[in-house]
Image (cartoon, rainbow, N blue to C red; front, side):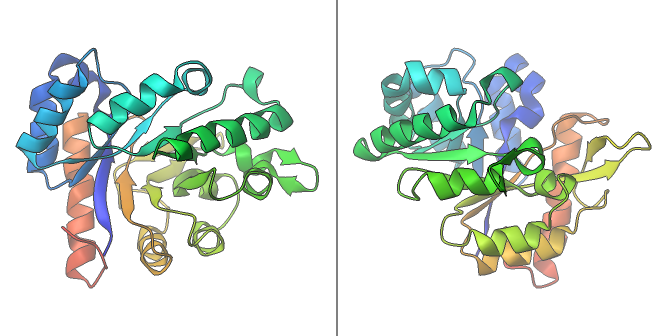
Length: 255
């Protein structure tokens, strides 16, 4: 059964204004785990206490590529103290996309994570699908170049879709290497750009993706909405309602 988490970047302004209250509300809505992108100056002891009080699991943390290169030991220790083993690179700026260098660095970071009981994952956007490395999309080249024991997949299924590929096929392709997916919906605007929306409000085939994730052995589906037109806490409540309806209709998700 799939477990349901939230990428807290979705409620970043709320977290900054009321870290404790926002985590409480996330738990009340039915999310079982959270994926951090920053801790807003809280100690690992403070964060761990809040997670325990609210019955939440730290399922992962997004950590910048630069910090992975320079302060990895510190990141591993902090995350271990809050009960998280999954360290995730969230994004690479254009100036960082020297892919040969990136792949070599991922091998080193991933090996160091493994030695210390952590797991390195990479979270994609659309450019890993639209840019090439040799004869392959960067997405596929990355996971071909870096061994599975050094790098796991956090697949953002919305950006796979926006990049022109079938998320269901990609989930099946990376089964066994895919502990976490991001479940995200979007609408394509007239200028061709993507607008992220609440689950069920857009064009992404969420049920098919969720079914494929369950079949592929994914542990966590993580809701993320990059930008919300509605108040973010309302948006994540709406997305949770979609998940609950999916579960009522036979979806393999624990809510």
